[in-house]
Length: 112
Length: 110
Picture: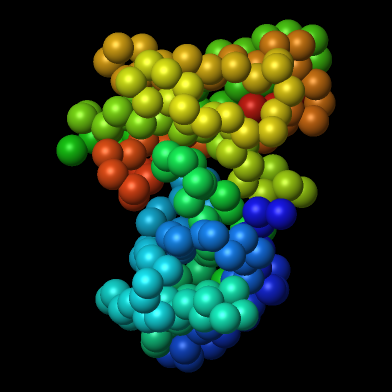
């Protein structure tokens, strides 16, 4: 079926470390993926996206990698900061229109 | 520019009642989507509206409905509330593919 899921519900890192959050998807027809960050009491905030014709995309301190062979994508956060503590979701665009199918989320905890 | 505005922020309702939630999208955005977020099920798509027409619908019972007005503002309604409807309801507006979310309405059904 169409689903986008995350491997781990929680991830704890030390400030300054690099963080890697993983996501597996099942729909081989998915062609657009997005990572969102949700802080407590707020709505999800767009971080970075990637299309299926790309393997890698970089933003400010974040990199998304897409492996279509194994239907896996990951979000890498460099030099993780306490302000990065949040729940991270991967999402897949719905077939028609802009509706999003979300994974369950990974809670990232950054300790000083 | 102003972001997506959802009202009210918090609601407490009794089982069997109905509720209406409101969403004002970012100016110029014509697409509005609604999502339900619960600890157990995560973020689930409810429906999407574009130019006053429902373009997509998620797998929710008919008690959940919505509409969009000519100014792109949207409302969603839940009738005959059940305890399991307690959740954070999120609205997102889009101009292209990037969706911008509001802070949500926290609905508690008692």
